[in-house]
Length: 189
Image 1 (cartoon, rainbow, N blue to C red):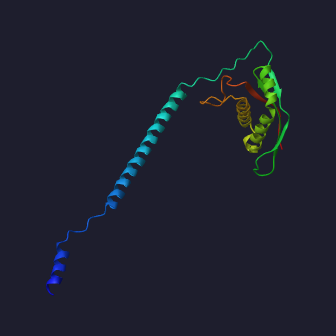
Image 2: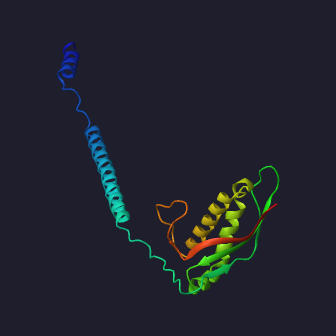
Image 3: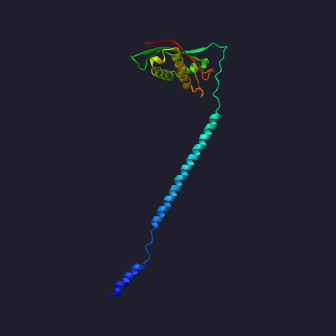
C-alpha cells in the first residue's frame, strides 16, 4: 500500500506546469490593436486639422477684397433719417437716458431704399448699442465719434458688408454703402 501513494506523488511532481491560458494573449493583442487604432486616428485628425488650417490661411491671404463702394459726386448726397431713439444708458452714479436723432449718409438712392427694408433690424441693433453705453463714454466728442463708427459698422453689417480686417479708427475710404452716421440731436439727461 505504500507504493500507491508514492505513485501519486511522483505523478504530481513529474507533471508539467499548467499552460497559461490563451485568453490572456488574446486580451493583450486586442489592447495593442485598439491602442494602434486610437493613435492612428488621433494622428490623422491632427494632420488633417493642420492641413485645413494651412488652407484657411492661404484662403485668407488670397481672399478677394469686398467690392469697393463708388461714390458718384455728380449726384447729390443721399441721407436716410432714422426715427428718434430714447434709451436708458448703463447706470453709473444715477439713471441717465439718451435721446438721439440719427441720420445715415449712404452711397446712392438705391441703398437708401434697401436700408428702409432692413430698418427694423437696424433700429434694433442701434437701440442695443446705444443702451449698452455709459454716460461717460459718450459725453465727449471722441466717444460720440466712436459711437457713430460703431453704428456705421452695424448698419453695413445688416446690408452684408463686413468691416475690413485691419480696421483702425477713422477708416480713410468707404468700405460699405453706409458712408457715415450723423447725429442731428444728441441729449444725455
